[in-house]
Figure (cartoon, rainbow, N blue to C red):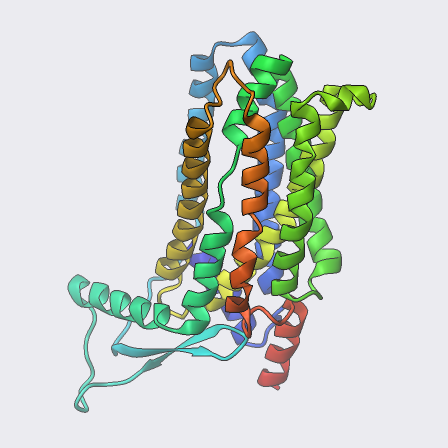
Length: 343
């Protein structure tokens, strides 16, 4: 994680090629989509011919392979001779710099672990106190913490409609391919659009599209002559593309906000915040599911749950002003400004 942030920041700050910042993000998450694509292709068919225990056994080998590959990563340890006392977040582009100074004219050694930890915590706290950092973080947290009805919909697809593991695996396959297409679409056409505008319009468009699930829940899609399977595929494809388009700018922004020396700490904090918000949204959705009495056999209030979850996704847009400044520029504008600053 630290290598990823460091390479992204160095490319943007050293004037080599600022465009690599977004390209590296897209490459990493595009690779993740390819992995999801391969996993989805085999998951459903394997469950048809193997037991869940055997499938989990095969899946457990992959994290071990990732751990083994980590030994192939070349990384030079950072040797510091002076304490970094201040982290400054530069204006709208969100780039962070450390100013290394001495205290009372004397250099402070940071060779020991305790001093290093204190310095990391101090730098992280200084960074988090900057409005240009904590305000975007707070908005993204609110944006990702909205409730979801995915758990209840899964029961509906399997218990009411009767989709099996093989079909759900194919849905996951198409969803992963759609995410990959979303990465390509962002790189080709949306790098010129302001980050705030991308988040605004993807949220606005996703809400009514999410409400189309009501057609499936009420089985009205059959009245329209749309098979259940075709409807599920079409709905998931569009929402997956929009989700990836909305997610990539937040990653570019997160990597650019990471100050030197605490890349791993701050980026891990940002990703933990994102994942924690998603978990909170899932838990809120689960609580709403229980309150509305939606169970694996009773889907009478599933339509109401879907309406609540989709409309609530628009609530964070009230606070989109928190992205003013840092989110008013597109990725290409950030890169162009960085090139001009290095000339």
